[in-house]
Length: 418
Image (tube, rainbow, N blue to C red; front, side, top):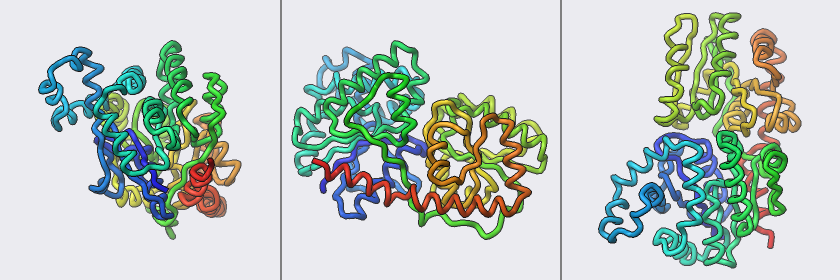
């Protein structure tokens, strides 16, 4: 099957959605699909390698300028061309990394408004038709504004949209903006054949909080490549707690730091490693939290942002346990599955998608309040049998329920449906 996969791109840092997209595209190719990977706003940085040269970066990011400078579209063509050159696109890319959720929303909704007579859209449609595309796959509700135009010009091509944690962004919007975005999604969904959520929790969140129930939707959980992750024979020499996720304030970093302080007071020999994607906006917003912690001699913390794959695997090998930050409306990060596949016990909040993982695997150590983390961590570090049993359950659970092969098999069902 010939598939065009459109993703927002990652910009200048490692991003879980971009990594998930790259893993999925590679897996679809391995089972025989011809997939063209097309980042549309930002370039893609993956953990393994840069995107290969056969893939096309559409550079839609300069549409940002059309929104920022409304008169630009009425300017002579030679002026418009100046905003398309590489240096201007790089500048727009950096600016986009600092956008607020409201600015992201405005840009997302503008995708549908700016479609007609846009050379970028015309080029995209030409690429889709020339490729003889059977399926257009789009990552993210924020890119859903592409769907109406693409359906209009490619009516016989199936369109699939993969939601990727948009509910966390919705939480940062006021009610009026949130309602506008939901209405935007509802309108765009009419041009989409299938919407895919990555957890029942995410699907229910939209249905319960925003009254958005999509008949053309289903849940397909993320999957990872098991062959990348190995169980260590020996525990690390130094007691080490890890956190591997996007390092941003919105991920409730304060709560994670508070939990680490509690652990250090009880177990002063313990160190913490923070790894994950981080852009300049994240760095500026979290600097006060992390700098204060690093400056205090009582706490041994290392911050390791934007780890490539080999460094991430080393990071996981150095951990005794992985702790998931406490967040009311977060979706499951692949780092949870990666730690489990490495046989590392995971301490996670007893809510949302982690309850779904626990129901399937029985492998997580769940807490309802941050203070419970200390009890769970102490049990893991002192009870070797418990730790070994959890380690076996973790890897077995991922192998049975969360492999990339299982994920692609579920996507194949969607591709085959008429």
